Image (cartoon, rainbow, N blue to C red):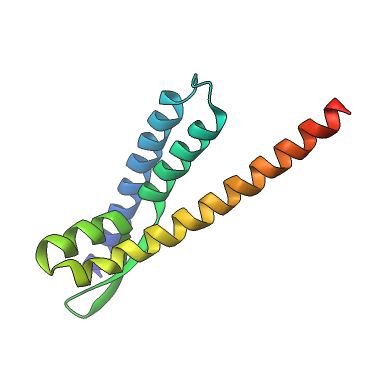
Length: 116
């Protein structure tokens, strides 16, 4: 039971820290003129900070931030095991890029309609 309580508290602490880091990314990109670059950098920051990956420690399945799983497995078990963290990050980046592309298409079509 102590492991479960520690696990939950650790996740709460990580989420608070990740929200703080994402706030820094948003403030850092607030005055950028290029809207697409701003949105992509914010998306990459959100993907790196908030994408989870499943991981087993001593046979106990758990969830950890994907970049931590990626780096931990890369340093301890090699490149093949690092795919546990890399695949969720790549999938989240793909979904984010698709979402930003759809947003850009809607923005472009609304701009064309406004000119007409």
